[in-house]
Image (cartoon, rainbow, N blue to C red; front, side, top):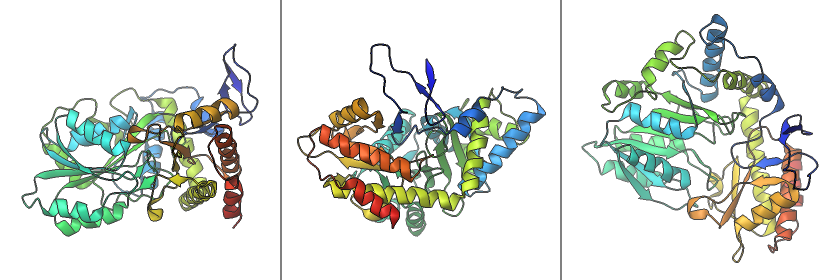
Length: 404
């Protein structure tokens, strides 16, 4: 059963044998994120004929809006899928099975993307890295310089590593590739940065940008994106692997007239149009500043609590998620359980090597100062309730930062 929440959205009602919790549920994972009421209402519009002229106008408007968001003149390819599907599409369109790709083990999702490449038959080399730090541009340059024959076909990078709260400097990585003189394609995952952290596909000369809908784009999961450069489109013409569903070519051909080669998720596209309107109304620069403020305020709170963030490089700290190390003797799963059961707030779990060791506070999407203060206050309460020793001044520190 669905019941209206105070947010204007709908909350899932508790089971009959559970205690009712007043108010609405705070979904503070770094994705999926809270879907704003405007987007929910847009998604509730009647489905239209996906082969009619009204739909063609919708498609062309959305594609232009996505180009604006990604700061690109290149085509945007949309698939009904999660970000994992967009990973696969980026690989199979540009590479021939057996091709060598380079990735850096700097987080759970960087590791997963390399695993997907391996399972698809590519020769993925995963460079050891620290999950508390970003990609080393000097190591990237060194690895490519050590490949004078150009056998490495692509470099896989994650812009914002959701598991660790570390942002990689894609412009600096592009410069490192240029210094090496290597022809490898640059493929970048923006699943948790798209619409929340500044990103420039054309300026940074990314060859394939990968994105998804369920984080900064204010939507549920279900839409994924590829943005191919001219080099990537040329590579797709000669790539020798099998492609069907993930093939860019029929999508781009149909998109030129405003249509898709498959039955599209029309109501998610309605929601995407509304989300792009919301981002445009706020202004992209203002969106990025808002996320940056919330990230900095959250780190102020963590520092005041006497806890540590996973990210150990302040200049790489994420604007959309803060991963917090549980103190010795504490388990992040118990901390999250207490905060959810007592206060109705969902925090992100520790993933991969950080399972049991770190919890994640999402501050992404349709989110404002008052919501952040409420979330940090709840975490402060929950840490005490879970028996975690901490200073109770975290919220005050965050408030001082926001006020300043």
